[in-house]
Image 1 (cartoon, rainbow, N blue to C red):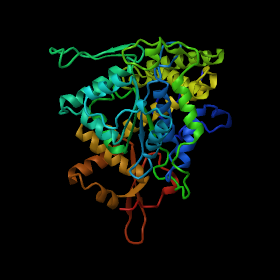
Image 2 (image 1 turned 180 degrees about the horizontal axis):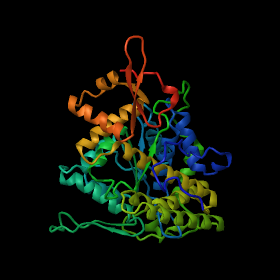
Image 3 (image 1 turned 60 degrees about the vertical axis):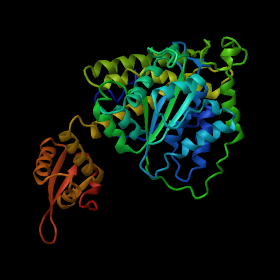
Image 4 (image 1 turned 90 degrees about the vertical axis):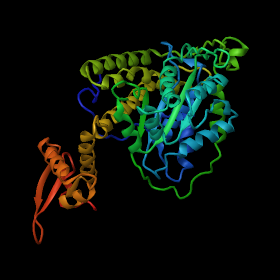
Length: 446
């Protein structure tokens, strides 16, 4: 069995598994969208485009398809890139593609104002993609201990909707049933694609969202390059006809399959629906069994840590993404193949590893830990930095705090101190553990 690098420690940052091998892009709708979003972008972000594509196909496949274990195509994902890095382009491409295909009923609002608004949207159409800009700020608002009740309730509803995709969602009971009747939605498929800059997202998770598992439902797509080479001659923004046709085919579902009658076919939220079961080939079934065993190993090796919440979704998200790949390839007669499982497992593992690594580096339980991690991140980003430059970059600290943190980082063997000879007097350097040797002697810019 393939041994996951996540079993013992958060992995180092690796390039994202976009599946660039020639035989891996048989997944037609995903590939068509990725090509469209990448070619039309001034700042191409293929990994973020892949995340948006998965959420797009997941929403349009909603209530039409299911895995043999009755998992559905509802996916929550977050795309992360620095400001000005092109993170919003794929979101705009999704809107254009949906409207070009005449499937705008699958598109939810771009701002989740309240839990009631979220549920009303899904009552109107029970399979919807919600694209949320500044998702980190949204998380800070809904996860805050001081969040207004109508905002805090959004997070609770998203958590319940995620686990209700295969069954009726039954909302809260209120005393005044005439003014606020109970909401019931048959097998809702809510997909979320949120984009954000890094800072607000990681600070939002400091309130315990990692420990309680509420963020574990999200796949985290962190770009490999915040500022990629610019495309000086981007392609037109009009979605290609082949992509439009592929999305329409997914929305139609499997020809001849009865979803439960005309009302169910029309996506009425009150109509019970019979989704088409996407079968696994023998090779895919064996690959999926290996993934489940690996997930169990991961849970056992991380017992007692917040990582179990992430690994608890490892096999589930792998199965979902593999089914989305199969539907993307052939919506009329989808079959999940072994390579779908392999690709999906690698992608989910990468997303989990990203969250573990970045949380370890950026998420703190208290103010003191947050300051330590902030200083350490400054040194890590530089690789090597002089004491003078580091003092200038840590003016948010008092002199006493600064010295205590410098000493603690060195004592904890997270950072080393060394003296560099200069023409006048030696300069003290702080070097992050694991920083490339090639950086020696280069002071970071103040």
